[in-house]
Length: 224
Image 1: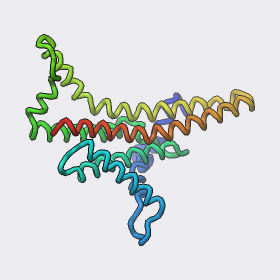
Image 2: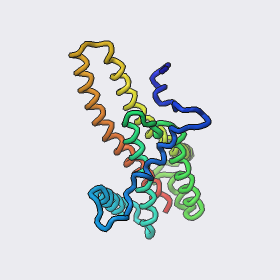
Image 3: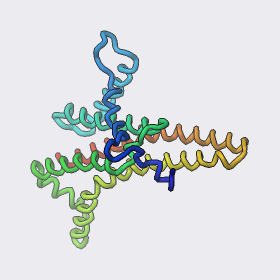
Image 4: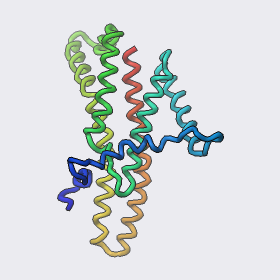
């Protein structure tokens, strides 16, 4: 029984056998395998998207070893996007709506970037704490503000992703619960509105994965 709207995001299985979280490994099963002599249309589509993303992030990062970095970023994009899209299907658990998943993605990436930056480019990391042209009277405040904004980056990354997933699902749940109250004419309007929201959620599911990796790429450019 659903006690509140947010109960729709609760795992429905027991703590001993939490099968809901198995949806996290489904993206690995959806990756096309190169067992065929001729690629399928799905493989060609995914390959085209990966090449486009690689070229975009290669220009953005401007590193000498961009191949490994962009491969990791693209992998994170596929993982988030596929989980977001699967969460829109009936009876599939939306794992990316939980902070335990989004923070698990954001915190290790941010921490590894910080360790790499402070160990290899310490002077540049200190320079990022004080923007150029800051008045002397505001220097201490700017360093404090920049430090806090840097520390809360993994939290903002995780909240941005989970909040957007929660918001769309709540709207669809609210509209779906109104079907038993109104008459047929109003129900047709509700169904059409839900279809429009579902189209919007499909776009949001892909955009949020793209925004997540874009922000990671921007954070990566600050450490070299």
